[in-house]
Structures are given as C-alpha cells and as structure tokens.
Image 1 (tube, one colour):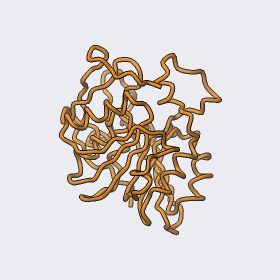
Image 2 (cartoon, rainbow, N blue to C red):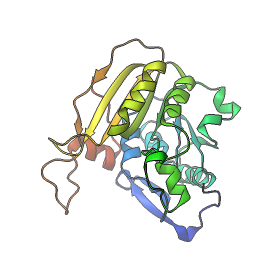
Image 3 (tube, rainbow, N blue to C red):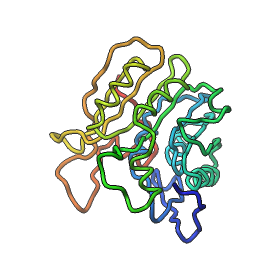
Length: 256
C-alpha cells in the first residue's frame, strides 16, 4: 500500500495519445502500459454520461476517456492514497474534470454508493496472489494482485450500474473462466473480445463487457489483432485500429 505521496524526483512525465496527454507516473512501482488506454477506447460513453473507473491508478484510463468524449461526469475509485492523489494531479493537468475517491472498492463511500452509472470500467489486477511470487514493491504488488477477488470487481460494478449500463473489463485470458462464472450471475448481454498479439497466436488478454438487466445472448467476437506482420525489435508495428487508439485517442468500439 503506497500512502506516502510521490516526490517530484520519483516521477516521470510521459506522453500518451501521441503527446496529447502528459501523464505523471512513478519511475518505480506501477506504470501504465497500453492496456488502460485500449480499455478506455472501448467505452461507449456519450456526452453527459456518468462513468466510474474502479481502481483508476494514476488516472490514465479516465484521462484518455475524458479526452475523447467531452462533457462526461467522471468518477474514479483508487485504493492507494498516493495513486489517488496522482490521478487528481494528472486529470487536472490535462484539464479533465473528474472526482477521485481513495477507497477500497469493497467499501465504497456513500457518495459513490448512492450514485448509479451509465458505464463502469476496470483493469483489475491480472494475477491471483495465491499463485504467484510477490513483487518487490508493495504498491506494484497491489496493482498486480490485489486483495479484492476478481469476482468482487464484477459484482460491485454490476450493483452500481443503471439498467442497461455497461461494465467493461480487461484481463488475462486464463482468468476468463473465473470472470464468466461471476458475470453470468450479475450481468447480461455478455460480449467477449479476445486480444491476440499477432495473427495465428492465442489471445493473452481479453475484453469482457456486460449490460445490467439485459437478456441478450452471449457474443464471442473475432479476436482483435494488436500487431501486424512478424515480430521486429525496431518497431511496435501496431495494427491500424490499435495505432489510432494509442496515438490519436480514437474509439475502439466493440464489433457490432
């Protein structure tokens, strides 16, 4: 748990969305990669929607979404105080209005519990703490394998949604069975969108979306390929849709 605020010397200021966003991140500890950016690009929010990110970290996902869609009412909940303060700083520096609350998602404060949301999204920790070696830094360990169970993220999101609202998650492919077991009890219209590193390779990550109070059937979309061609150390060779989301902040809508 990181409670002490980050000093200036421990931070780097990094470009996201091709430099359209300037984001402060710890040089050591949890640093965001492309995953929260891609997740934010999939959220089907429209102006004036109310959106919550569970486990918002330094605010990268909220910043990307708020940059793409104007006039959103944005909220973020983050367990670690230092990262919650970093999220506030990042959002303010990029002129994006959001309310960040430092809280355990399993014990959200009344202002969040009384709200209902059009969209909720989250990038839950990818690892089960019972089946991995701990990271050397406690704040990074929480980001990689927090105390909240994966099922908690889904059930809490479902409770806070308005009827018809969406909950969208990005997670490692091997944890999909856990997610589906819970999602089927609290969400409808489930959609699975695997993310494949390259053509012909098995997905490492998946996007899972559900809607509250919807009875539409399960949809399994064709995998989205992140990279094109053969692997090269000299270029990240993203596919056009991925490059547009990462460099220009374009939407990455689920397939129809």
